Image (tube, rainbow, N blue to C red; front, side, top):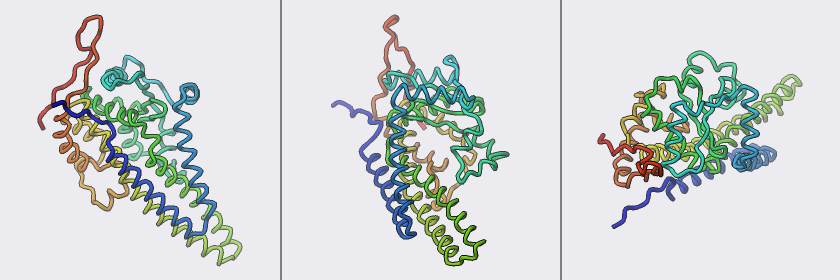
Length: 333
């Protein structure tokens, strides 16, 4: 009896991510409707369409090259050399996954990282321990651009090649699944950018009302802020369930490629500042990535299922007729 073929994205993954994102957007939209802000409702839909369109644009090679070259010229991005360990490992995994083109790896600077990581324009707090934790742990895939971004500090964080191999396989799972086109990612953009604009807009209106002694407008503005904040938190909690599912799927695929549970565990322990610390279920609701403790438990359970599938086929080198890559056998945990 033939073994089942490994699926990088399962039907359950699609159902969970789409349903949780739709529920999160619905709750957020209902909150905006209660706050009587039809402009914000239109903005939410517009941002979702723009985000989806941006993902499509990045899939166009000419546009992708233009955007990345612009970032490189500005000095905010720097290409990692092809002979660097991270690039070499990524190229090997690309062959294993049957990808036509290996993704390019770039390092980004602190300002670029802060701009994408922090809400409400509070980039000035991106320093000290917060900065140190972020720059040492960031690895992110840009599916539409077939690109992985990181920082120089993260690449030089003492990761072994086996640990780096799992991280690369994890990120390339996002590329393989084209996660930039999922509703969960679009919902995350909406739940970040729309509340940010409404936050500053409401504060401005409230300030004008306060100095103009217009108490009804001030009270209405504060009420809108409260309603929108509550709807945003509820929407994010629902959507984050789908985003955590996306990350767990990438972990599962990383294990399938590497067959190395120990290196997966140690990789997260090395890049995750809160490794080993327990996270309450309430706090986990507002995380778009699983906590390290829960992540390890899920990976350990998933690894038993992964080992039941045939290892990924390794392409051969026609010149030597020998395997071009070495695939690890399953390791007991």
